[in-house]
Image 1 (cartoon, helix red, strand yellow):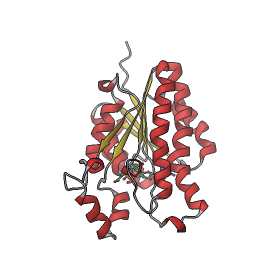
Image 2: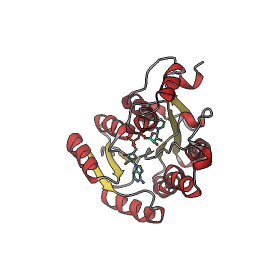
Image 3: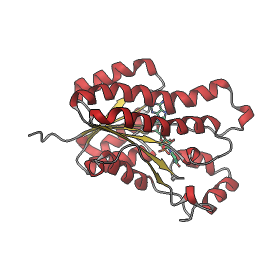
Image 4: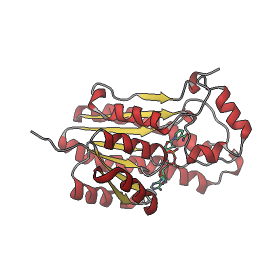
Length: 248
Ligand code: NAI
């Protein structure tokens, strides 16, 4: 009988939605490896969450190093049962001002690293015959939002990739789902909304629940999709948005 705790990787797990997810996982007894770039933030998270949370400093834009990163994590901690591809960045800029390099930078972290990390983790999950992956999309993939062209491209691709992976990997016992957060109170949304009252009013006025979401709201959905409670759920995009995507 295997009584070892489940093992998860959460990218960007030291802040915002990733940190809330890590808290929820640890509370559920899931050992969680958080990956990020800022040692101080990673250390704060592990200090708060105790021995079920460990961190790895890594810049996921370094795609070439991801196979070695995963080998090292597997050697140290075992094969993960859960991967949450949460790390991401946004860039608000008018369409004609976005450079090719800007576009590529957003795609690199929000899409390429998700593919590469997932591929390496999936190789190990297939050997185990089980696994659950949760990707993070956005309202930018549900309807048109101005000034976020590269982010929209990346997040729209994430939803397609989720379906393709779910289809191909299901026979191997791996489920792949996606959470599409609405506007959630984190550093990322503050950067996009706080200096732009018009945009913030627009967001709130088309959100039937009339407020920004809390990172814990998204974490609860990620925990559900990652867990065995969702054992017959794969390929879905679960919106956690206070109704924003269907608001008038
Ligand atoms: P956040 O900025 O608080 O967290 C993002 C995390 O990703 C940070 O911990 C950051 O260090 C990490 N990260 C970024 N680039 C990285 C890199 N190159 N290597 C390693 N780690 C890196 O933002 P938030 O809001 O918690 O975002 C989490 C996810 O949720 C992102 O994928 C974002 O696109 C998505 N999202 C957020 C929404 C919001 O309203 N806050 C709405 C829709 C989607």
